[in-house]
Image (cartoon, rainbow, N blue to C red; front, side, top):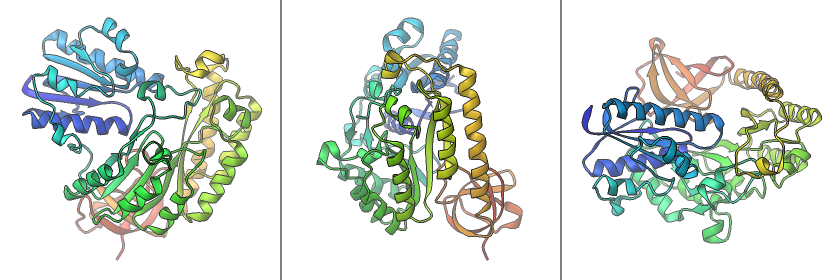
Length: 434
């Protein structure tokens, strides 16, 4: 057991990671040594930042709590604290079922952890973070919560209403992070295209990104988690005209069949969705679109699923993730629909959809062979430098592998012109140009 050491374990999405990074900074300001996501945590205090989105994520969080609770029972951990989405949603249940945890905190009251440790929350440093990603990129959270209330989604039950951060506060954080060496920003929110409505009575995401792009030292800006309904078209101009705004957009569409979209409360039609994709591709040539789709939502017929498969073939998304519907208690879908599609049917549909996408992804990758692309180097792994293009978000998208033996010495966090010489279904292989 390492004295005066806190192990912070983050589960779930990058929005959780930002919360953990703020907590880590506060703990360090109070004299603690803090580790993050260590393979074998051995600190005397452990803080688990949980996810409560879907069944698998909840199970992972509960298993981690139980594992650390066992450490406490065995005497190799003094104190255990749990925060985040799972404890926000199931505070009473967790308190009763896993009493070994010293205290549970919700998603937004974890700053009280410092008080319970006998320390002080440093309000003058509330926006400071200790970056846990490679030092050249960071996640930038611009809002909390969501006002969409999709029928299947529990996130608004956990995070509450959409709350935008003031624009000047975000820009100040960007400048601070740039001064620390950050060059690439993954802009994240539950629904980033709604940014500003609550503060400025208008969608202000285009203005925010335009102003971010003006900050010296910002090399890449990448946008995550847009929503198709009432999409702010002025954002497309910014993406097209600003060279440091990546031609990349993560926009979760979920489905294309009108009966399913209606049951999901997505407030958009299949025709409107197709028109939006066409306009995005026309206004931002070369853009890579990432989307998320769901199969097996109550009301999805075989005909509706076939329409979804044809849509994927038509849209040719460069990046696509999909998952099977999982009933979440408290949601509209759980209380108003019967989850009557068998699990084996859901999984079969999921497999069919991803086989289609695998072929599309392979063709997208193959099309890059022979081209020279700007690549940032993230790390060295084995015999390769591992990097990404502007079309690749960390951890979820393909990478570019450059053989160490065939390259000059490359610096982590720097950008290079790389000629793509080979592709597989997931990754590209390249060599330094010239």
